[in-house]
Image 1: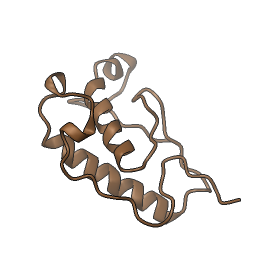
Image 2 (image 1 turned 90 degrees about the vertical axis):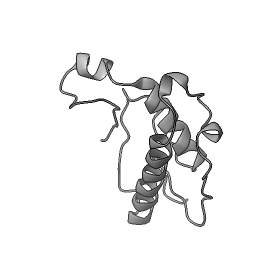
Image 3 (image 1 turned 90 degrees about the horizontal axis):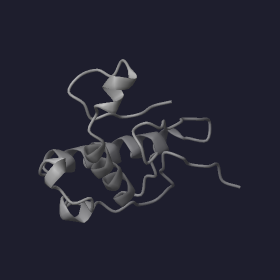
Amino acid sequence: MITLFFATGPIRSWPDAKAADTKRFGLWHSGMLARGHYWPPSQFEAAFLGGAHREADIDATIHAADQALAALAQAPPADTCPSSPTSWSTARPSRTGGRASAHAHPPR
């Protein structure tokens, strides 16, 4: 299991988690969707890694997360930023080849 919080310090309790920046998470999540990766839509949910995830899937997800974080770092503060990733990210890389998703399923 893995999750991501946008906070100024470690998350050790419910009050810490509740104080995290959900707007920034929403913008990051939109960036992940724009890159073809379906991450859980709330920072209070967890993504799961499993046997269906190949190393290439995980690498592609990490790459997309890095790109979404880099675009977010260049964005205005979350309270002044629209929720659409097209308004804060000029670089929306295309997804080529293979299946890469936080919730990939094995081929049938």
